[in-house]
Image 1 (cartoon, rainbow, N blue to C red):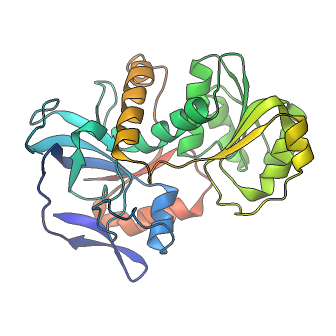
Image 2: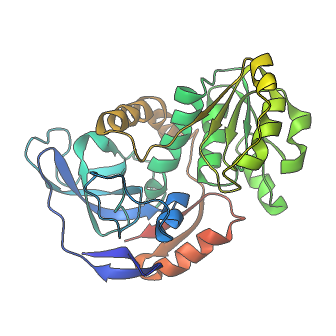
Length: 314
């Protein structure tokens, strides 16, 4: 099979042996695979696959969509030819991928390719961050920092769908109208304090925002950190944290166990896929590139300033 491959700090296309499904595993012929910040970090050696995951460290990709091309012993839910998608620990950007059956989700009929390849990572991340970690409820006021990216656009839609009020910061003025169309009140990053207080803040930028995030929280508010591209370190006023009875939690999905990932997949199936089927939630795409243009895709991703996901097609 051919796959996006990390060679000496560069992304290229290379041949690899075809994987074979083991017990409880499904072989997926990949049609589309999204690009994410973790792939860029892996490219420069900062975010390898978790130890013991069995994932090759030279093939990036945390999400994929395709059709079932092979079935290992014990698989009972999916059959050959079924359209499926999944959040994976790596190696998603390849023509073939082996995925545990419990991590797979069916693709709704109205979720076309290549949008399906851009769905699993960002919508799973956004769902977990908002509801499992942040406890977001109808009527809450949510702030999404860096809302033009894949997780940001997913989070805005999920929050609007349950009846939360959403404020979103978007740095690029040209991207603000597209995020506003998803249901958010969109503001420049420097203006977010005036829009509070916020019950939940989804932090996709990182350290530079944390102190001001805390000052903007409602009593009992929650900050959920899932992005640190703007900086790793933050100065905190613990008195302010105590006074507001606030909490700050950091989270990621890649290092979680199979059981945790399977549970999250079932949550997304139950609570998000019906909204996709009903047309209330969609996957904004910034661009799609064929596998042979993977270097161009990574370069475009690194440039920032776009709305939605970048996807590789196979």
